[in-house]
Length: 423
Image (cartoon, rainbow, N blue to C red):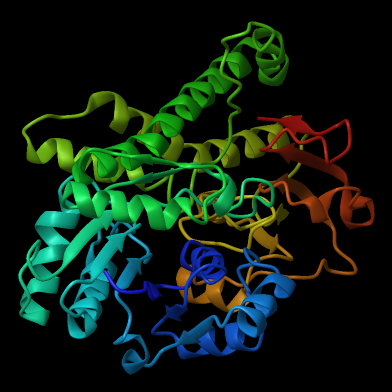
């Protein structure tokens, strides 16, 4: 293969950090169909906050990183990396449309001898059975003769500035042993944490889809414990702290489980299992448990209000945080919306404050208005800390509270007063 020139398709939470990293070693072009996204990146700013302005500007200025929405700019690349979202639809079925669309884009520009590597989360078989046929159809080239493929599952942890893309070990694979070694060498040249070359693409796909499914199940178990211990009058946090003194205890915490990975991947694995005639009971049970937590939080808050004689109908509630996790502006598949919807069913007036979230994105995706600045004056009967943003640390909400009020902390983060009720 001639000198490698990389194109990363999809410049979101996964694609941009990867493109920035690749640009330190290889000529790299980032491609995204959203022109406004490309414009902000070329101006040196990443609104997802995954890549600092300093690093992004350095990549553009000193390493030649180019971001574009013009397909002609990626025709001379020979190593394509697809990093587009793979969501689920309203029925929790895998939605492969972004992946198919990206494969069509690759098919329009790929040349003989090139490699396309998929990073998007999928279940085993999607790369070779769903994506590659699209590339073949559009390009007219033959797989494993004219072009080749690989799969290297993304392991980005949005908002985490410690475990960045180069510091997380990467699984790699290729459509032939030789291509697998080449793909592995490209990634290992920039991933300081090292790589693991899987024997096949399907093995690498399987590894990705079970990583977050395992975490989902473990959190579901702790969420169920939280419900049980609440009925017993025991603090879940105290139980977990005591249990964590054992060397092999896994320190998971209860809470909302959303986002584009943990809240989605189990459905991909379940769909795959069902295609083979197997009904995955534990995986789907974990999803049901975690999907129930939003309404459960709302129910806990309402009962606390009633016990204190606080009116529920027409009451004012402040929800702190709307993104799917702390210190991250990503609102995809956030489970905070489940709390908001449940509260509104009781005709409660819900105010959502999140300094990280984009108001337009929230309005477009969920049809609600949020605040990015706290109101100067209010009279809230209930406050729910839904997301433990660092920006909430030391936040004084006392002037915003009704004398009779309830404070509920979903994350047990101790950002709020000692009178707070925890999940």
